[in-house]
Length: 430
Image (tube, rainbow, N blue to C red):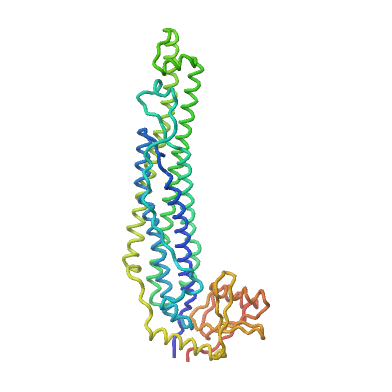
């Protein structure tokens, strides 16, 4: 007596979700890579800005490299899971899937992306106020570009948000597959868990980088505007002509000089106090960058690399010719027992997902769609969803024929109970 196999569509749903995740991550990374190309003359030439820029660059390089490797991991996971499904596929398309001629309908194919090296953020662009040197010498003007920093912060946040939502659908598809009993499942489950953990940590780190950049930019902007305001008020306090003369190195009266010195001391104290806030913001940002770098290294060495060294080290080999033939014969046997005409050409349809589906039988005269599933467990796969939607729109009957021992998931049983699916059991194993 033959054993029931697992439903390959469950594997294809998961592999397709990994491919989709790789495309989403690659698109987000492509956008961030393009936006970060403009992040030059940003940090500022002052000591605070240089220290901040150094921490940002080190952390940013590590994060972008790891984010790029993450797209590779997603693509390789898609390949691993897809081939596992092919190894159990009893459909007439299995050999084409196995040779790589076509992909299963649920799988759009994966994409990867590698970021270009970050450009140095060294330098600044905000014009130095004319009175800065006579008030703050030898302090350097804080010429960092806060507006550009805000844009960079948004870029990191957008990428983090994209990465941070990838796990939702991956978890759902893995949960659907997890009930399947095959030799591959432990490795797939372990690799999946590691990848999900890695993406959670990586997206958090990218979000923290965004926060560190945004937090420093906000303080920098406040200090710059406050300093410029104080220097403008100084001109009013001592007189524009006196201040202009002092800036130009010209002599002024003793009384004017005495008044100017008093006002300059007051303004200097105010600006220096504000500068302390900038120093604190830089220290906070740098500590965040350091922590994010540590997390990113952990993600690469403890989560991604073990999976790349084990489950994803080599591409899964195609199924042997004997395996694909044996699987196909089992599928044909089940279809014939279910009464599917072997001489009838199967008709395909386009589902709501945009994927092309090929049911085992589509009878327009009887207004009936039939699927034969020779599997251990039957869940609500993307294929079933598409075909159900097709039937709902046309008023067709959806007939699901399974083995006597096939187990339906709660979702599937609910659809049967509601009358949306007509479930027929028969013996496929003898």
